[in-house]
Image (cartoon, rainbow, N blue to C red; front, side, top):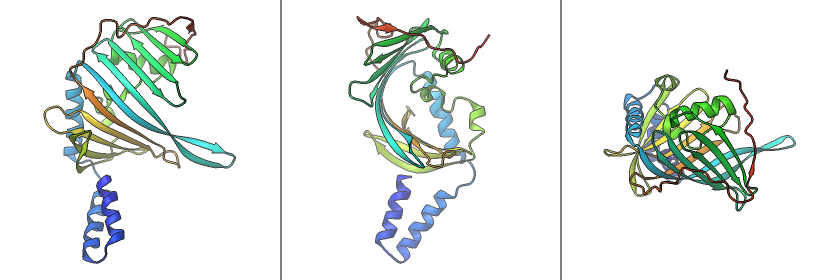
Length: 260
């Protein structure tokens, strides 16, 4: 997508045959109508490799568009967050999320038995019983409580063959440098979602960046995340255990669906 924007900018600056060549190239990229097998294979390889990464720390800078409605007008506003995800598969996870108002943060803990959410300011926390693995936790939180585990796309992207059947077109757009790594840039289109994925080249095909555009909203809000990976972290023994701070207040998570 960056390549296309750069070419369109060049067209505005020059004329003649060069501009025609650039326009044709951009049009060719933009009008792909079926999934490129290489783009689909890259997604499958990334997903398969991610299943082999058992322990990691992932730092993420993300932006999320939200729709602000004022009377009859609506506009997109962008919120920024930073997230640190610490994982020891299959049954330990911690997520620390900061952003929004100064001093605001959220924290998620999973120790293989319980899942806890803790927020600041206010020092509110809630703990619920949890299944034995991160994979099961993702489904459990969504089904019972309507909660999406922070950065759950890291564990699920490309992992379900049925999800890939929704991809109507897929294309390779070239290579780019992200955080010093060379990453292959792919674009995928579904009926209600456009998404782009940058995958690190080489024998460690880690996701470098993700962009998602929601087409079902006329404002087309976007989510963008840039990833920085540490595959050899030093994780303390108590990293995944929640200990309520002094004056913290326990609340309940309301179950939105009866699974019995």
